[in-house]
Image (cartoon, rainbow over all chains, first blue to last red; front, top):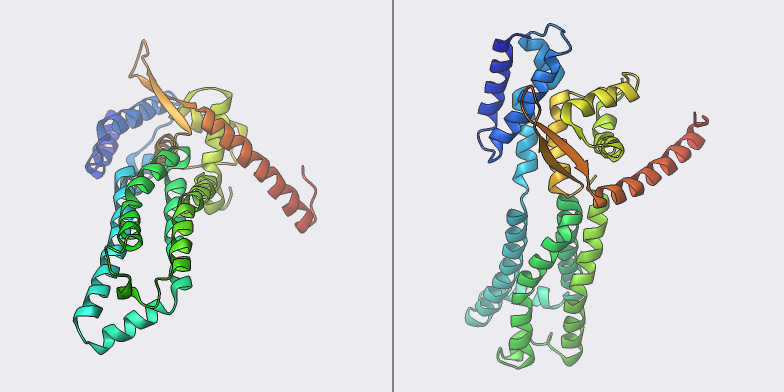
Length: 208
Length: 110
């Protein structure tokens, strides 16, 4: 393999990896690989080298896929989704009491009539959170799950305190808010972490 | 040669298995994989590195650089305790799977 072939391959790879913060370290690894190939003393054209190692663009795409899922992105994505659910619910409740729109009346009444479905879907959200974290980060995911849970649970606790201490008038959610329902919500909130932890462990199994 | 998806799905497990025997650098891993499989398990060599980076991100392997007298420093990969645990778990699962598949398709494990 000529030095020109090596240089061309490394340059193509370096260009394709321009998005990656560890580009120089990655290129160094490939450089070492190409130098090891030299000892085989098999003449390799650029095309043959690409066939053997893989196309630089395809390799960069694999790195991109791996790099796109970062701890920070996944963490904030789930925190944001959870906040969005609460803000959406809050706005819907407020709009229902402020405006006399038929569509709002219909939507609010429909949602209040299916609390079990909402609870199940919400558990689904936390299960997905745990699973995705475990799958992407394996054993390292447990620490991220704890961090995401601790921040993600804040809106839940705020709403619970506001409702339990009647700071938000309970009648706003009539006929949903009963003592039994509040107890169910407290128990479910307590179960969110164990459920997402189990899902995280399941995701970890799928990480390899 | 095997089905591409089958190879893709088992590369990480093989890498962990090889690293469980000794620390290796990328090229060495490729050669060892080729040798042990008697040239039956061939991957595009360059695609091994993204897989290694992913395993490192997940905490299954770690790396260190080793200076050489001649040539550039080599990046050696080393399996972690978590990697060993995962390897045991997945190897046992793999053996069970092969046993069941052999029974189902009526062949004996070689």
